[in-house]
Amino acid sequence: MFSLRTTCSALSALQAQTIVSGNAGGPSLVRFRHQLAPRKVTFIKRHKGVIPIPTGGSVKGTTLAYGDWGLRIKGQGVRLTAKQLTTAEEVIKRKIKPVKGAKVFLRVFPDIPVCIKGNETRMGKGKGTFEYWATRVSTGRVIFEIGGTPVREELARDALRLAGAKLPTIMEFIDRKTPPRLGNLLLTSETKEGADSTSTSTSS
Image 1: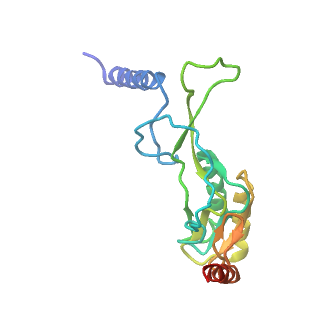
Image 2: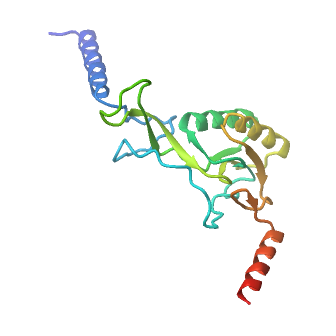
């Protein structure tokens, strides 16, 4: 008969061997709780794509929806990786930790797989291997929001400033009164009135 210690060690070795052999043929699709990754993926490889440009007039996702303070993209659209978003979120949580009940809302999610081939690799032989998850965001998109309980503006501004320093584009601090943004254009009441008058004169 085998002892209990010998049986447990054999089972652990078998499980470790199974995990290694399962990941040897391709990328690890295991999603842990602390990771930003889709729960289920049909195709692990996708086209590179381009950064969306808001040319249709939609301002969806450019204003606050859950919190009182937010961080919005002011510069050029960019592709944000899951690691960058996680780092920025941890910075905000660490800064607002003394405020009980304060929450951080992430308005974007990295669901685009990025594949990379090694340097000085000959052409052909298929697409590169999976490397990380990312998301494409355009100018004016809200990335983070702070809410839950009332948070002082000075604390929220400082936390979002530190988070914006971790992201590879120019960010801006917004609140509930900040107007929506259409690309590089802020849609204030004066802008809307001017657009309405122009359309009226054109139609007449």
